Image (cartoon, helix red, strand yellow):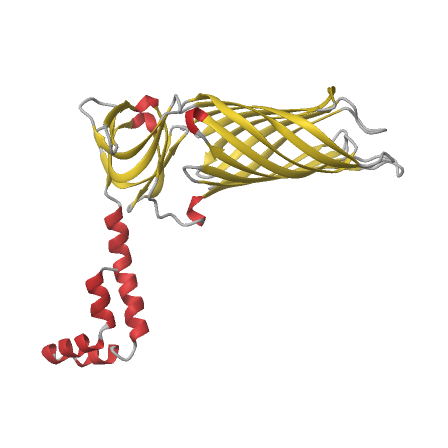
Length: 376
């Protein structure tokens, strides 16, 4: 609300003077309900403020210009808020130029970051970044990420995530598998907070002595801090259960240093190395143990905008610090494709290996599941 509007609604003396001049008796009654007037003022002024904030301009290859507000750019998709269409995703390859008075953090493929406003350049597919000290022309193909620095998004508006549910059943073996997953992320220009959870339950008929239900569950948290030149630090903690491998409970926590080896609008490849401590209890008679491990992670993500689809490959290797020949691995390969806006279908292959499993447990376990999910 503007200062003048606040004074108009909050100052009763002013209202009385206006009433005497206009002769409007109803205005005097409004004086008796200051809270109503204040609320009405907020409601009336909020749309104007919201519309005034959307002053960015995006020029598309077809010649159309869209007025709105830049929310972010990542993996070739520009999140753009408009009055008529709400928040939409625009393929970065369809954008010729952008003009904005917002202060943005602009990151290019080699990890260099610029802070400033954007303006159109002389050539197509060129964007001028106006910083405090210089003006830099960047080709749109080099820009891989943009984040508003002075954005006024609420905590809930910065949240992104997804959840899915899958069900597989084999008539011949009567094996039934249920799978549910959830991923939530909160990202700013400096860091990323994440939480993920996976629950797998496999039911296989057998004799009364056998355990017919097998569970594989994990919950993980991480805090990733972005550094210069595509480096980042990662702190993580989690809990998991894996019946097939004899793990009743495993708590873990650690830290790692990583770098994005490849970072483009379609592909991202990162390598991470660090340390991890665990405390494990087992399904059998083996005693609980506490161990120190290394952690090596390779992660690759390929993303396509139209139709929206992505492939994610992640593998983690955990060698035991006191004897690196003893190690375990966790690998996930996920294919996901959107079939209706915000609704997607995915296929997930997961593989686990332990070179020295607990007594009576398997070395290897794998699952292949299909799911339907929702993302926001």
